[in-house]
Length: 82
Image 1 (tube, rainbow, N blue to C red):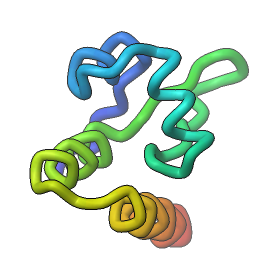
Image 2: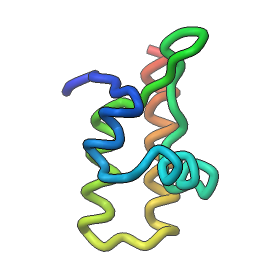
Image 3: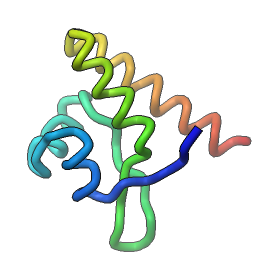
Image 4: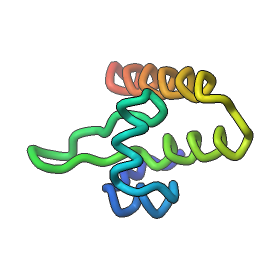
């Protein structure tokens, strides 16, 4: 499992979304929240972007993607507790 974190340019390239669309999707619950990389930097785990891309390609509904986002956030919690 790769633990690569992508900053916004990498997230845009990997997803095909613009910066504003990524942040819109976060507000809609359709994209994971960024992780802090420091006081002025954030990024997204590459495996989360991959999972979201697979869900979109697979034709998942927005509600199903929201469930996936919740599951990805819960997975983060288990990683931070370990």
